[in-house]
Image (cartoon, rainbow, N blue to C red; front, side):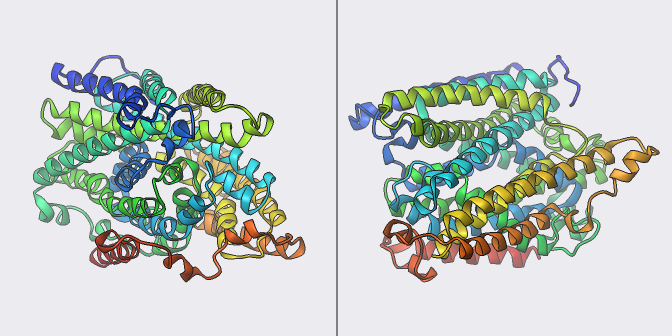
Length: 566
């Protein structure tokens, strides 16, 4: 944990005014979202009836869905860790951004139609329809855990690191302030408030990050200034294994990332809840594809600035950077003029608050629909909303405690974040993929796979934690020297560890499904594709809004960028 300072560093009255106005505006918009929508659409029961609080009454259109997906995904973890990785390893970590576009295509084409057809409020609800109640309960528990400790916990900590590095604000104070402000409008407004504020926050975030990139690009001397001061491998997206690969050689991006990408983008409630609130199937398909196009940008506005920072340090334009974790705050402090720092602080808050609000709303939905309703199946909607609000407050408190006491240490923030995801994702990814593509996937296979897969992931994470502690410990201690070598070579790359774990989970699922098959039912079979190409035979808008055209355009765009940066 960094040592907090109390004095503000370079924060002018104008900067502070921008931050204060932004905070008041976004909280006000969030708190008033439900009232505004009722007034405009005369939906006097929205927010208390018909899933309005949890799913925005099924009113979300594709631009809102796409911007909200991007905003929920891009948190301060990305701003901090992607800039850090750009500084230390180059563009290679950008594979997580461009490969995400392919996973969003899978969501739009293969998963979204079934989620909307089944009319589910949560993804565990979908698993119950496809498999069993046991699968639903287990996924609900894991999803709540990941939302609290991954989406919210790491986001709050990353926001605090940047605000501390930029303005000298106390880390713990930043964590509590951002959590309370975000929790306030999330508790009051529900998903509609979350999506409306996320849309605004996406614009603020993109404008702020683009401004910093432009200032850095000018200061470094353009593309020539970058290429002359960093190794050419730092500008390559596809690398062989070895020093400087940033932990993601080409085969890890090809094999390992899709495992966590499909979990994150296609089966994680925090992300997919925006699609579940879609106005129609086409809105639910086009929204993720829109987000896929936006996901191309982070390589240039989040990661490339880290590479430019390294180039400027080598040029002598910037002083030496003591800690790569502070790359983003370091650039803001040294490159931006007075006043612009306030905009960047607002952008950082936008990144944090959008992810936290989305995760809090998904936790409320998961607990209320998947757990509480089992014991109170006839509870009125007003009671469910009340339970959801209480759940949001409790989750926020847990995340604050975890952010303050559970995160930190010598390991790079991105590596800690990514490793947990890599070990949670495999059993869930396998369960959903087999569920929608293989008719013989059974309920027994589902629950056994998720139980065993999660247990294996927990054991592996324990091994990683010991390994990290050993690396951070003082040299010369026999115990730590032993532990530094306790990680088998097969698992030293956590992206590939996710792939190996997914293979084991797939074997477990298929074997147990053959041994303990389900009795076929019309509902279960309706949630499985007879043939993968059937996904392309649904109704689609005409012209440029056709999801088939957009899918092909997104695929070709990503391939083109890979060729350019290979």
